[in-house]
Amino acid sequence: MLKSPQLFHTDKDFKPRLLRLNNAADETAFAQLISEQRCIYHCDKIYDQLKELIKGRNPGKNVSETEYAEFVKQHLNGQDMHQYGVWAYYSWSSTLVHILDEDEFVEVRTSRNQQKITREEQHQLKTKKIGVIGLSVGQSIALTLAMERTCGELRLADFDTLELGNLNRLRTGLHNLGLAKTVIAAREISEIDPYITVKIYNEGLTAENMDDFFTGAGPLDLLVEVCDSLDIKISSRLKARELRIPVVMDTNDRGMLDVERFDLEPRRSIFHGFVDEFVDDSGLKSLNETQRLDFFKALVSFNALSERMKLSMQQLNKTITGWPQLASSVVLGGAITTDISRRILLGQHTASGRYYVDLDELIN
Image (cartoon, rainbow, N blue to C red):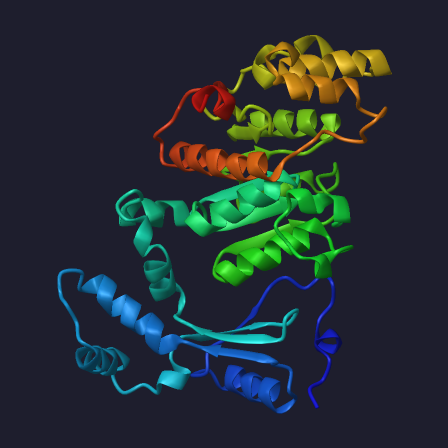
């Protein structure tokens, strides 16, 4: 009888264990996983991945199955295929997956990015570090950044856990109810690409962890801020401006996107100067409820919101409990933010500003 996978992981686990069987310690660990029946699903498609690698390196050649076998044999150069590459063990799903090692894995996984992203650009993006604060629309952004491989490291901050009402926009399953949103996102990223470095901050962004989030193991190259807290929106921007880190924010209405190039304009007012009267050098001023509402209206340019969002804002804490978000808008936000992030990191977009990708206007 298989042992319960719950015996072998905690709700905080999100990093796979990478085993290279030409290493004695890893080979022992691999054998132990098998003998103790910790693996309930075993995926070994390394031959198919090697075929993909060979096909990508011979784009103009029509390779037959027989030729593939010979190419793979030559590529292995005497090495046992079972030991080639890496075995990734995902404890939370009790799954072992046989994959190519990092350089070949990235080469194959990003092959369909060419030439929209060149090999040189892909290598450049691999060195970049992106922080994401808030994992509702932020989950879609983080996953899209990972799928496109827009960076080599992601830092994810959110204090919240998954609730049933989140499933109108978060791509995950019912089995993850009650799990930290950071862990959910980090696990899915690692299942897409275990070679992307992911660091999580389950308590959200705080005064205590802010320095580590922004500069630990190297400074961020870009901040994506999509959280609900007004105080964190302000304090994270002040920190980004201090460190000259560009900031991107998707607001989830009319495809509204903010870009603040503090790296190029270190004295630039946060939020394009829209909220200067509410903010000083220490952050958000002490505001009463009426003033906080005025601050929020200024922040989002209330008159430019969609009519349904204006109506929703009037019903906050009356008939609805939070800022409404639709899956279609969240996924669009992931796409828009990833696209502009890539262009910023590659030096292809240098302007600050507020932009709209309004589908009601574009598809009328």
